[in-house]
Image (cartoon, rainbow, N blue to C red; front, side, top):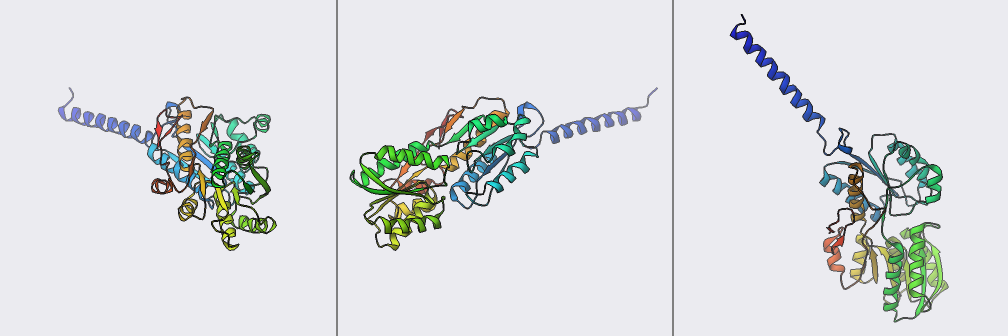
Length: 346
């Protein structure tokens, strides 16, 4: 015969076991969403060029904010400068050896990120090409593929800048172009778009790389102003170069006489537009691009579809709308269609 006291002890023991199982299960599920319905937590790695450029810092901030919203771990790292391809590839190589479930990369050039991504591709981890096109042929040769390209239409950005410059100059004039890093595709596409929009109307008298750097742009613009004293417009392939050009124009005593349009929409450029030292900027909303990257990774690790190309929003910012842009910064001040969620983004 089993005593009542023994029965009580056994029931208590069973209760402890049940509680232990429940707690263990809760601990295993801690940490947010899971990849592909399994127990492995979603961990997203994003590597960009550098954080000294406010554009890439805004992309980082958008990705981190979206990660927090989604309840997943997002790590964003970068090289030390716009041209630091070695530093960037080292970051990717290190992250590739860690337990990440999705990668997003912004290359310095068309090929520098391919080799460190080979081990990622071999493990069948989804990779996103962000902002700047990576060479499809070189990637294929290395066995690396990308689930999606997420970035702005840089040709369209150049065309919008060209149309704005035409309007500012009354359809005629001499202009110079400040290019980005030599051979970098985004800058090439912006230049082509600008040239296409102004062909036969504006005369492009000079173009020169300034490496997306403000001080370099100041030096280059100063020399160009001396060599071409009749120019009435400057198109800079990014905002930091536009700000350098604006300083050169001011130093030459030509503020207001030379129109300057750049690309990116960083805070300093928006404030310069408001102050009148920049005529306009084509904002590309890198914050939204960072958000889109995380949203795409969430879809991919959940085995949901992602478009092969996701076009981030762009918009001309000038005196007519700069106040709204600043008030909404770093997010877009107008709604846009989000092809990943299928909803309106803002």
